[in-house]
Length: 289
Image (cartoon, rainbow, N blue to C red; front, side, top):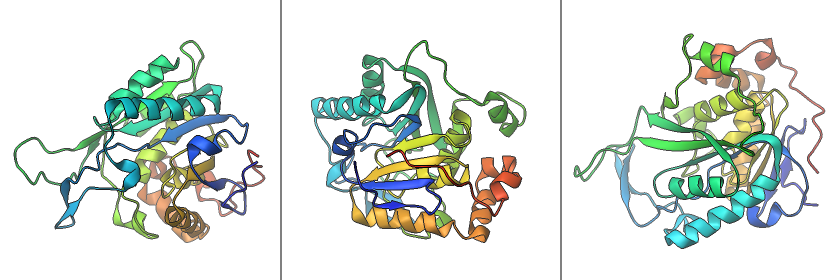
């Protein structure tokens, strides 16, 4: 059994250090939902514009460009392992850009998943296009799929409709990229905003659900899960990102910070209740191993 790198005092947030392709073999536990932000394979020496500066977009060796065949092989391996860890009624969310998302979609269908939606995250504050030779990149995609074509899945239709001013929630979500307050413990190069993760979690899980993130990074999935009253297991290789994840989770033990986050996250601000703002955090969750 793997030994946790870190687990929160109330056991709602657990981190494992290592390669998910290895660690997922080491325990037998089924999750209600999986969120995965795998490598996009776009680190090829390109540049972008951030905070008034031109910066290189390379994220690290793990994100270096690969052949189409290598990308397909990688996606088949990790998605197959995740499928084994998903409950029969569970769903998986996978984020990406054109660099990897088509391979992910094909792999999901080959492995027996049913794609439910492809969410278009339209960023309200995208970086400008420096070259001025094509349209500005302002979107990412998140595929939502269930494990089996004919098994029912959970979707909180009513909540999503209320959040969307009484109208059916569409598959285009207009949200900003991460805000400065989300970088209080440092910044991951592919960090996803809590607004995005919170909507995903609220829409597709019930309270106390178990959520897995095999590419945890700075654990935005886990922070969103904790704020929403869910339980989280994250897998990450890099020690620096694990330290950042731990600091982020311990930060929201401070009730004033936790309450502030709930007010800043749009969907939580809408649905927050005594449960979300209660100083007594959920406890006695137990561990997946």
